[in-house]
Image 1 (tube, rainbow, N blue to C red):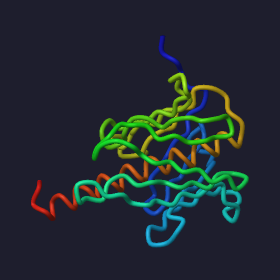
Image 2: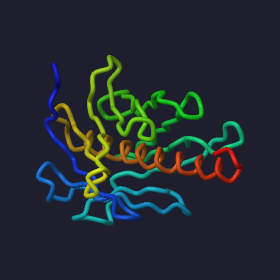
Image 3: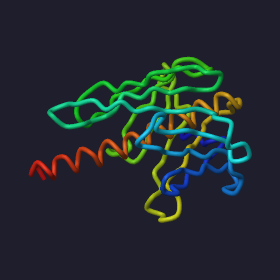
Image 4: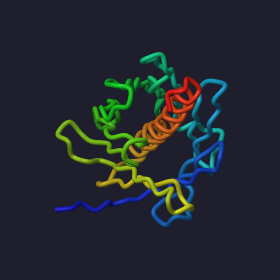
Length: 186
């Protein structure tokens, strides 16, 4: 039996930032700003209070087979909680990354580069949130479909960790492709 989301967040790629809108696709909830040459590499704020940081992400690249691959990610979440999200597995892997949220330990699974979607699941595999790629629409990057009601801080945890996952997956895969092309592998 398919589950339907109780809330859908719409994500738009605006170049050096992502704009995240609520269900109505007009109410701005978050901005994710990217600064690749300084840390943190990603800062999430609210459009109505851009000086207040909701969360950050810093990416630490790893090497496999002499190529930069998936990063280790360090998040700073609401109330100053620091969480590491390290990917385990092969060069291109759909293995999961754990994230300690206010509701407990959850896991991002899937792979943007492989499938165009990511899932945030609990320890029993129940879906908390899904990212679905919608770049094919030429209008929006994708959506976060949240499957049950969550409080404000939990929503912050989902958005910060989820946007970090999307950004890292897109960046890592383009870096690997560039390195392979430079090496004459593709």
